[in-house]
Length: 337
Image (cartoon, rainbow, N blue to C red; front, side):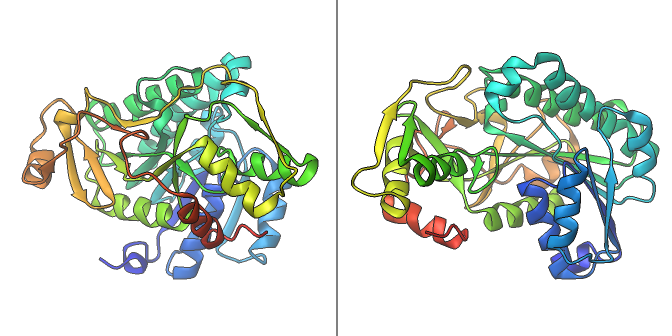
């Protein structure tokens, strides 16, 4: 079904909707002009005002100041909603390490509140956006997102509800606040120097528009309980920094080695070796991880698809971006020199 028809006359709620992902999703839905209403549910009223102006006070946009930790107000805000895109989370690894309970409250309890609010309001589908850091998590952020994935998957089994719960797992999306790109550019343009944690450290990267299109595709495909994984290229930190210096710096730009931050891995994983036996290839841009407890609706839909050949899917063994390809991606993303 064509994207516009799939969401025709539907009401969509985006938690954490003033962030980078939320803005891109909102732009996508408004361009289709088939949705009935888009509700942006977030804590920061200043960002909501900025976003309202950015989208020229579009009448299809409704802004709600709220917190996913507050079950009652979230439930009220979900009345009449057809699709929920759950993006709200504390994301920065060092911030999460220093604010343990706030991170747990937002990323785990907040996710359970979304589940309960969606069931109470008979929402059609809930799409939980997760991260590569949820796989074999080494830091608190990853641990809370892994718990979120478990909550979302189990919600399809433990509640007698028609609501379908789907997870989409992704690496870094260029330009988002969770990505290192804005930090590197700011460091170079402000002080003409950039910090390097580990030159061999690899990270996934994808264009935001490609990521949004894949999220929409997964939303349409999902029958509940799947973890969809975006197939993403990667690069190492040194290649990324040298490319950004080429675009924004000069021969005097300094690279300062600072070592890994607390909780950082050298390489990221999108599909672990434990998940590979339950994973299938949907197409050249999308994988799916099936719930390990057999379910007929999964078998009927996915069992003929090809299995992964690699023992795991990591930022080390995926397609590696060269400098010219990174530069092209940044230009496509609208990053201006």
